[in-house]
Image (cartoon, rainbow over all chains, first blue to last red; front, side, top):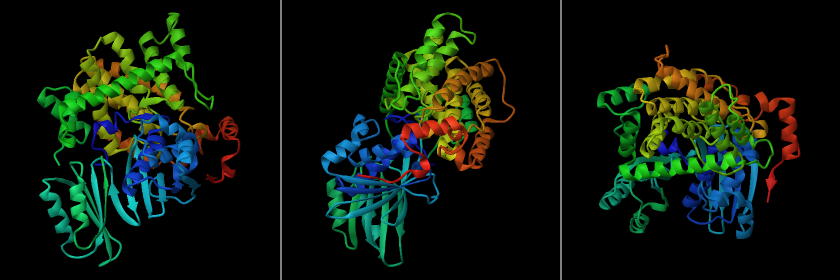
Length: 220
Length: 302
């Protein structure tokens, strides 16, 4: 089930003109910023399909930049996102790609600063709803419906059990969980959607677990 | 995960079995799926209703988009309506003008509530704030109108699509008009099955509608498709309330819409490459607005 809430149908409240090309795009930017954990210093944004063809008219570009600056779909500052990015010193580049992707509204965001780089592929599936389908080369499915934990770890026995035990110890319920790896025995990624907002204590605990290399969160 | 309904047949069955309106079944499903309280859910919908009302009000004052393609038509229609010369009737034109008002605000990058999308955002509020004057609903009934539209939209979104890029305009204004028809029926005292019939009657008349926005902007023909969507919603609701039924069951109509969307060429799915966007005037407008032809579009770097 792609859509889980009535408010994805009646909603979001948003700045026009397009739910998929403006609001969905803003959310892709916002989720990328959340996962990156801080304001990126630069962003290279590849647009595909309908996004590539119509992004200017729909304000897809300002919306993604607005999302990267932390603006939600209804934030009127989306209109001035380019000026705000200039002021805050975030450089950006848009590339309209010819390549056909599985979904017509696809964006690949490569964002970074002196500390690191992150690459995310998001799709806008209609009505302002989006999904993250790839993160740093890992295929995944992240809706942003629920608060989520993303754990990068070495592909070893027991890591998943340790992580889920730590979550259970916080009396937290897992709504959805996915594990993906690029190659057997190498790096793997756990995507865990939970019902409550994740607290810092749990994040620290997970970071301290053996074979866990990185933990990031997504607030709902 | 427990779910009360995943198609229209189940939705109507449960509403009839529980002797509850469709809106109530939607609220219960939302509580189940999101684990939020009834109060929180209703408060959020009340907020959406307030946004819709202010978009209609703003549009009726007269707004214009920065491209200059759309704006001011809501005012024209309201003024004409007041002359008493309207052929199609005041309620219908009121809905049309209020749908246009909302989409004109959307095109001007104003604040709106997507229903189910921004490009189709005029139909649900347009019909609601017009029917309101005839049926005098309570505030609660107006909020319920939105839950009923949401119930049908939820099914379309999960079983077909509400995205113009994926399914064409039939998925956007087609869904919105059909959802509105179902909610009008409920507000007017029709049965859940009659809501489903209204939905089918309208959707069947939206099938095949392509998404071909001039210059890729949510303006031409989107604003006028919302106008006609609102009109179809009202007529479809009246037909269902009169006892007319759809020969093809609602879920099959939704499935047909989905398959038609999948077989639509990409030029007619929100790429601004076909249909009205590809007419000589459509292309000339695009060149004028963006100062150059799409083919020579280069990368924007800052």
